[in-house]
Amino acid sequence: MLDSEQRKQIGARIKQRRLELDLPMQYVADQMGVNKSTVQRYESGTIDNTKKMVLEGLSRVLDVTPEWLLGETDKLDPEVTDALEIRIRDSYQRIQSSFPLKLKTIDADFAKTLLLYLLESFEDLITSFENVDERCSNVKRYRRIAVELGLNSEEELKNLLYHREIKHTVNELRDASDVLDRYPSDPGGAFDKLKSLLRYLPAEIWL
Image (cartoon, rainbow, N blue to C red):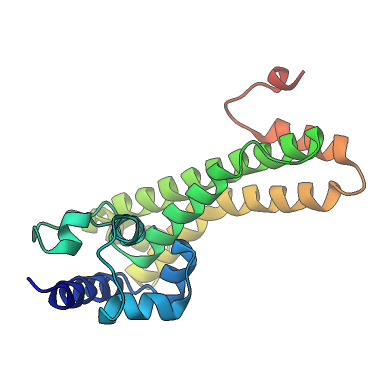
């Protein structure tokens, strides 16, 4: 295959996958550390997109294999399926690469503890959504409860369930906001409050 033809075929796959994920060209460029115009030329095949470093970078950002980009296989078995999952993955990787934090000890410990607390709150939110979905899947029970509560429709009951389920997460996020408000003027007190909010780790680990 001529080099120009291969570059165009690779470029077509780059564009295909980027559009499937609904990723802006600028986002791909930022993740690869290049200009938007460079990604544009990768997609058009007007510059060399066959280099190993380029293929590996694009593969990581687009969650594909170099072999798929090269057209050596049509098998596409991505771990992520949309732009939000891609960006969440990339955000996790940036956070992980920031450790150890270049902050003074109390700020670093506070930031890490806050991150852990927010992750636990996210777990609670997912569980809440799963609970609502499970309850709403039983149509007969769903209708009976709606009647017992005097609600006019199943949709009203579903809204009520969502509000009740996510209330815990709302309260957790409010607690995090209160802790952050307090931290500038009272770091020690704010940190103690934050540690008391954690579910699994005993406060003694910070002693």
